Length: 422
Image (cartoon, rainbow, N blue to C red; front, side):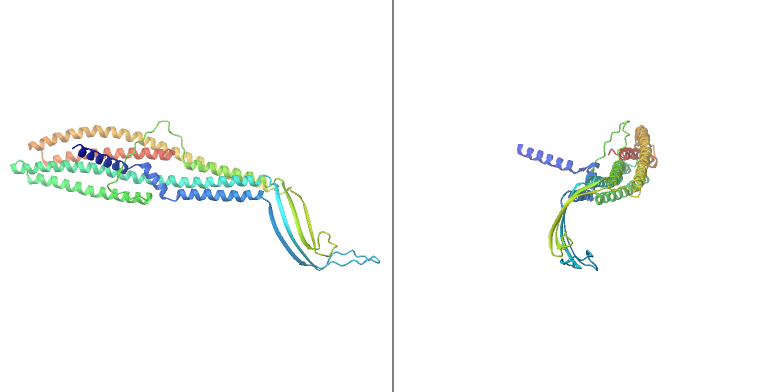
């Protein structure tokens, strides 16, 4: 007997654990949707692109080696233009050949490579923030579908309760017909209301199944009608108004990118310094009067400093300034719009809370009225259609409460979504 009790207990724990695991939350749907869409892959690709690009930029600090070859024929060659008795000056060949190995090493590039690395890193951050913005839009879509499912579940519970109440009363009417205290007319009225409740249930079930199918497409899941979806419990502080949307981070990253591009443009006008070595073989060599094939080499240091670039620097600065102002305007407009929307949602939350209080008061009265009507129906002093009216009035009040409760959850979710806290 003890073993049997232990088996029952284990089965109960396992069943309870499986049920708990099957409960789906809104945050779970967020994670599934983000994993289903190629967001993570996009971020990984962006990171790989950045790594490759920075390695390419760093290659400028490695020695640059080139092989060059050239064969030419020219119409004239250098000559002294004089004759010296007893000395024969050989004329240079008009066909000349040269092959060189050139090696150069950058010493100072004016900070160009540093700015290029900064631009590449910040540009990746900009693209990553764009992915985050897209991910947030997916969350907004998940919110809409999830709330439809929750609303359908609440309505189903109310319709099922209504059917239970109508069926119980129909059984009483049926029993009353046997003793002559109830009529077929009363039974038909209740049967009609039960059919109407069945029709409503069909509509709600179809809406819930359609929403679950859409959620499956977004999350890549296999949720079904039996899946339990948890209603979010959301708390909002009165001072919780700071907007922290990914769009704002994107605007900040774009501003940083412009600043880095401006620094790069300035670096392009700074001095450059490098070492070089050249080894070659050709005819003529460095001694151009010696018309034979020779090996030769030369080396040195190279300095480059652009004194005048057509005033392009000032134009670049003006362009970047205007672009930065444009981004700041977009950011200010977005922040203002989000502030207006958040205030509207906060006002909606306060309004719906007040409606819920009245709903609860109204339901208490409707239940009291229906209970009195039921007693009159049982005593035969009230018609069935009058009783049905009181039952439907109570159910309508409960439906309104359910609708307002979902409106409250929706307003809270929308509020937190708008300010970027969800």
